[in-house]
Image: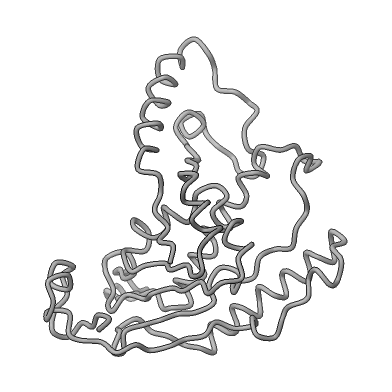
Length: 250
């Protein structure tokens, strides 16, 4: 099993680069040779970073017989590892189970308050489909790093099929009783929409048909409920803020 952990030294590298940039900012204007895929202001041009993963992570992925994402806070614990340059590409090359462990309850990153048109407070929550889509987007962002550094002619980057959702996630395991909503029909529709996008992209760039064909056993994510216990019955569950109504994997 390969747990995707980002390079613990990258923050020191980034801080050092940021300090160097700050020292040279007055003498050297920001380079115009930046990503053509998104517009950046002067501030983001100086401060945005695309950290690379520890090489040992990519090596571990290449040797893994199963890849597991989670559990943890989506945007601050899970995604920072997945958005790193080349991680998604390495995972797509694998034909092993890629398993997402859903949390047993929402935290402040997957639930929030909004004000309705009539002024009432409304609680919003991400369901399993939204979480899967967010993870796929993070992988896509990491895969685009190569393209960000290339010319519009795509020199140095081969044209490959758009990864499917099931290239990233093949299984979802959730603790029975999880408060995160799981709609398998919605997950199937997400996978199907990605397949249509892949087919349209393949046709537009001339990718061979056989490269774009989808094996029948990968057309949907397998969802499985796992035995669970109340979160407050274990130390880790309590530490994570879980109560008696919350569930964790048994």
